[in-house]
Image 1 (tube, helix red, strand yellow):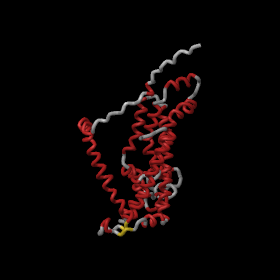
Image 2 (cartoon, rainbow, N blue to C red; image 1 turned 90 degrees about the vertical axis):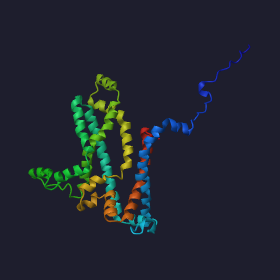
Image 3 (cartoon, rainbow, N blue to C red; image 1 turned 180 degrees about the vertical axis):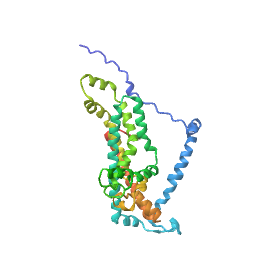
Image 4 (cartoon, rainbow, N blue to C red; image 1 turned 30 degrees about the horizontal axis):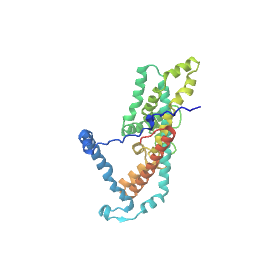
Length: 322
């Protein structure tokens, strides 16, 4: 039996060699898009003046700075400032305070924002929903100088809160004067200020869930709790994981403005953080080299934490910016 001749199969389009991409010359690109590059000039100047040019000040961390001799004329001490810094008990106390306060803010802030978003998502009266969201988001846009001044008046020993506690025949609470309570005052006040704004991204994630899933679950007899457990939470889990990973970069940022406004020497043992210590010792105390050393160490650690946070976001939530 004679076998038929083999038919020639046309090469698939997937296997055709790709044509080389022709890149236009730079002059043609500039001529066609010069307006976009002109728009970049203010941002480039701002970046150069306020971000790149001040980097020369990093050198203060490696010298015994003398204002009369300048940076180049000051005595070079290498890593001496870092050895002096990390050889002090106070430095590790600052690290502990910063980590505890920052971690508490991240955890409680995430829980509060998520819970508020889930509750607000169940509201069907749109006008009431918008009013509540507006009121809870407003504190985010107020400075801690304003909010801190109000909180000092409310939470002081003679403030409104302690007066109400006294009327109940209870002992007044030193929200701003007891070292054991002061960190919780910082954490809860930050949570109150930011939970409305933090819930915006969770509300956006909730709107992306297909409403037909809720309708089908309701037809099958699932209640609110069941729909929350099996539809809502799994639907926004990637967003929760993403936000948790990105928050890792802020572990060393415990809130400079808030702590500076609310703290006092009585609560330095539990409320003083890295940023306020740098401000007090480096600027007010004129110990520029030591303050720069601590600021540089914090920046280096923060840089690696940001890299870790984006790596975790890529691995756990499939989020990439590059």
